[in-house]
Image 1 (tube, rainbow, N blue to C red):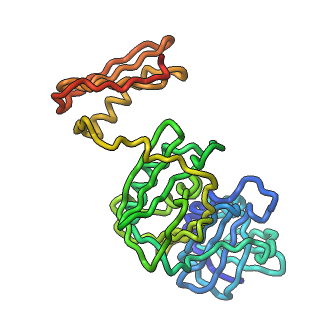
Image 2 (tube, rainbow, N blue to C red):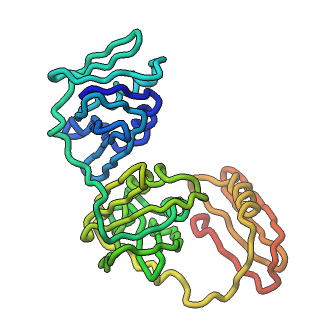
Length: 331
């Protein structure tokens, strides 16, 4: 392998995949990343911990001799961060990787690329198609409610339940519950998935990191592999692979009421500020805020024995009966 790499392009790619690289592993080669240089149109950088993996397209590599090389993640990032060169030359000689700049040279031992586990590419013929913005919003607005440390049920991820032209995302830790529905078209004949797949938090963070902002309309492809793994393709950028969370997801449908007795419109930004103010006076023993929806106003109250109390009032468009949501932890 022999190539001339754009330093910033490779550094950005390493930063994107480094979150997958395990700090410790019974397979030391997994603490590295694999670079495949094929052509000037784009090389591939891979990382995996055997549970989650990513194939990331690296631009700005001029390939003289195509090939594959194992890069030591941390040392390579240090070299790229501290170098002042715009481009660095990469060359493999025997079992060594040589990195050359204008006034620098590094010789690093390089392991056999054949020992690095293959990260699957996206080759599905049946999959779901959604916009990057919708998927990003769905992940952000449900992932916060999960419990990655839980060994009970499949709470360490977000449920993705396909429907007719939609996908319902649900996250819960047994106390909080978040649900969001996004539009999704189908290509081919995906599913049915029984049970519905649960994607782990680590993979969701990686997917969300690779998506553009919430207004991005670019297509994202999502495929489930026979109920055991998920593949997400960000066309022209990355393919992310992940095993699914094992276990049974709680019947979240039982939590939502069949009918809505009271509906009160609220402005998100104003409500967020009021809740943040009321939550200032909380403690580890009393972390909640009481909500009292009264005629024309919302009262937010919190009390903590050793900290004090807070009261915040917010005008609302409500003229019906009083509705109270009480923090049971404080009792």
